[in-house]
Image 1 (cartoon, rainbow, N blue to C red):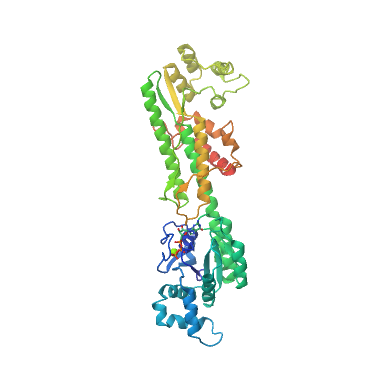
Image 2 (image 1 turned 120 degrees about the vertical axis):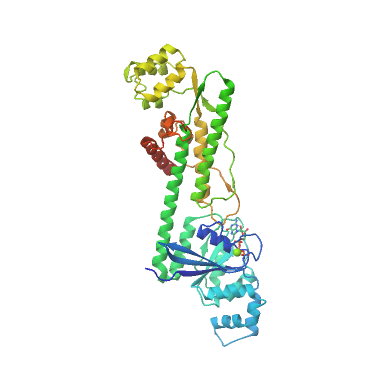
Length: 463
Ligand SMILES: Nc1nc2c(ncn2[C@@H]2O[C@H](COP(=O)(O)OP(=O)(O)OP(=O)(O)O)[C@@H](O)[C@H]2O)c(=O)[nH]1
Ligand SMILES: [Mg+2]
């Protein structure tokens, strides 16, 4: 296709969020300089959006307009032919005044004249003041299509209706509602579609850009859920074995386990931020409140039984020892460290590695430490909340990323309810699935990879 990129000049009054809009459209938190002060941007700065390495859209950030009425005065004092249109602006730009008093404004007008279309950024919280009408009057004379973009539309004081009516009065009917801080994929799509409707020649490349962005968004989400699932498996399968009876050692081990879990969560958070191109952005996430580990062996859960081929409920297992285990379960008993029982089971189901190891721990007077279900739920829910916050965050946002609250109606009952997803339960009895258990971790485990993928898909579906 090649063809020329569509050149879009981002123009408007000073401090309306032009540079912020650039950042959001470019997914680049570092573009230009953003400050809550007038005249932050002093020069035109360009950036491209590519599809298959071809520039499709070239965006130009421009300084804010401050004295459009001064330009209207100049035009009045220097009248040209009736209805001369854009040549009036050219005359103005050729005048020494343009280089002096109107230096900033001249940069904007030159860029708009050199572009295919202007995006006129409006702070929708502001009333429709005469100075904005003056700006629109000057910009319209540049003979370029102008697409007004209402920024800050998520703000309570935004009055989009009044703005729309005022713009319609000036013949500007195609208007986009946007918010550079609160990202809305539909809003962005509407913006591209309006550009297409104004400039049909660019329909094909712009449609491809739109499609690419949608694919990328989908892929980002899938990857994010996968990152969260992977972290959950690591934490669910984390295990520390230590001698029973040494309280100090247990306390130390618990501290270390907590630290490893917190580090693991941080890795997940960092990857999520990077994935959404917010790497390095300040974030205000609360510390994980690890209430308590799961002390002691939780061997006789239905999950553990199933993992090792033991049917629960029916009292039928594989072999006498498993039957014995089920008996113990149905009687509501925990198997004590009684060496006779432990050894008996160990002997009978020697091929069932994990169970044997655990029973040996018991028989040898050792205990197991792991992270409790409540903590896993907290981890899952808050990473999903973070994911939501990232999805809704524009790259023009400057406030720290917050975890945000999960909406009550969020379809996360499975995570909140009694049972954790099956793959989390499975991980409980697979210490070799956890990268936190450095000694036994098997990163190449196929069953781990499958469990993690399934869990990721589940999170994607239920998030
Ligand atoms: N809440 C909210 N704040 C915004 C939005 N857009 C911009 N801001 C804030 O508004 C201020 C100005 O943003 P800039 O992007 O620097 O504005 P600008 O139009 O480029 O300003 P100049 O370059 O000075 O003309 C910054 O504090 C932004 O964080 C928005 O949609 N919502
Ligand atoms: Mg700026």
